[in-house]
Amino acid sequence: MIDLDKSETRILVVDDEESLRLTFQMFLGREGYGPVLTASTFEEAMELIEQQTFDLIISDIVMEGASGIDLLRRVRDLGLECPVVMVTGYPNINTASEAVRLGAFDYLAKPVKKADLLRTARMALQQYGLWKEKERLTEEKERYQQYLETIFRSVRDMIITVDHDMRVVQMNDQAKSWAAMHMPGLAIGASLAEVAECFSGFAADAQKVLECREAVSEHRIEVNPDGGGHVVFRLCAAPLESQQGKDFLGAVLVFRDVSRLEDLEKRGKRTYFHRLAGVSRAMQTVYTLIENVGQVDTSVLITGESGTGKELVAEALHAESPRRDMPLVKFDCTSIPENLMESELFGHKKGAFTGADRNREGRILQADGGTLFLDEIGDISPLMQLRLLRFLQERTFYPVGEDRPVTVDVRVVAATNADLKQKVQRGEFREDLYYRLRVIDITLPPLRERQGDLPILVELFLARFSKRLNKNITGISDQALQLLAAYRWPGNVRELEHVVERACVLCPDDTITTGNLPEEVRSGGREGGATFMGAGVEAPTTVESKGVSSLSPENEKAHLLSIIAQTDGNKAKAARLLGIDRSTLYRKMKAYGLE
Ligand SMILES: Nc1ncnc2c1ncn2[C@@H]1O[C@H](COP(=O)(O)OP(=O)(O)OP(=O)(O)O)[C@@H](O)[C@H]1O
Image (cartoon, rainbow, N blue to C red; front, side, top):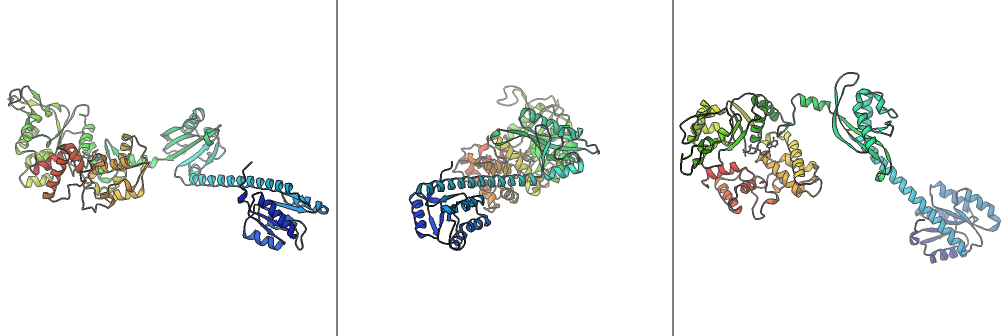
């Protein structure tokens, strides 16, 4: 039985006898019911009923003018469900039982005893309470059903539910229109197993779910319908259970025709290529170039701003070449002082110089049979330029202190974010070396010129950092993505990667929002045009996050000094704070004489 809150029950007593009205009002009021209102005529009662809602109406049958039965009829005509109790004198007992047939809850015979009145009132109110609760639950269920149906209708995926015997129970509109075109046999009531043999993958998934009561995760299946053609579906299946998994109802299959996507991918529209991500035309050109150039042994020069993915291109070139099982040796030309560079690259003989207490194999020899990646090639000294040119021309070299040449089979891939051509014009870089290196030139456009790549890169980094940070971040709000798209990205993909990493660290739930983005990005880069530095939460709070790329040379030098000091000389940390990589930092330090 449901509990009644008596003080919240509105009762109307209708009687033309004032003493009876007052007695009923007093009995009910003292019992805690309220408010209890009274009316002496049909008209007066109707006026109150139209103005407010009642939980119980107690009405005399015989009144001057319209009767209590008229009142009951009127109440039901208005669609009101509240219980009506009739009061009648002994001679009118038959009329009263007639009233019950017409929908009255009960009747009370005069003289009405207090106990009878209270018992009938309690029962009527309790029954009405139950009815209201049932109505509420039905309404809620209907609303929920509607809500589910709306989802069912509006998702772009096709959805089919099947029962234990694999008979189709429900199909959403997408599934229906797809079936009408490609598989007319697939309809509500049809057996999924029998519909078409070529769709056996669907039936197999459904069968698995029905047998194991476990979801089958998303996978792709190829289908060759009778009418010909070739269709690829992305399909997942899950058990269909009632609330709390008490009843097992069957399986739900969610699938999507991805043939067009597959076609696009096959036609060269690739989203990923080795560790590179991007769908823009520029990146498609880069992928194709790498594929073609990978097969030959010519030198390649990769150019592009800092953080555009030059190192990833070098890796992909190596992976695409027949040298892929041999070493890829990376050498950052700015990472070590000039005087040690020759020995580092070419190796040295024991005793070649003070401190050379044993023979040392250089990077070039380590790369024998494989690829040597020379990063930041624009920064090497004229002497090293000459040595490298000789090596590229003759494929032999002399380790420091050694007079016998060493021959190796190495493919050289170099990268720079400097404008080498300008350096050649200014006499800072050898023209002959430039052309030797640049047999093939792969240029990576800055991120701001290939905005179409942004969503896919964001998705890639979100998945990466969500996993690394052991979080469950599944997406980014449209508004946050719009801010990222509007930003100029002076630090390119590296900077974007740091921004997403920082956002993942700050994000408390499953969606990155604008609040998780740094101020620079939120203000559209208007904060003095400074680059976001990817400091994330690891940055000491005392370090002012300010980029370098837009500062004047004097300010940039001072800023570099300040960051290096604040990180206690830790170059890796300083570079990270500045949103540039270590080699760029070394280059800048060198340029400002800060070594
Ligand atoms: N197209 C891309 N897809 C996925 N990640 C990328 C892409 N481009 C760059 N990145 C990421 O951005 C960061 C910087 O890339 P990378 O080191 O290859 O750039 P770079 O051009 O060599 O930079 P620098 O000139 O400063 O050495 C890396 O973490 C890399 O994984």
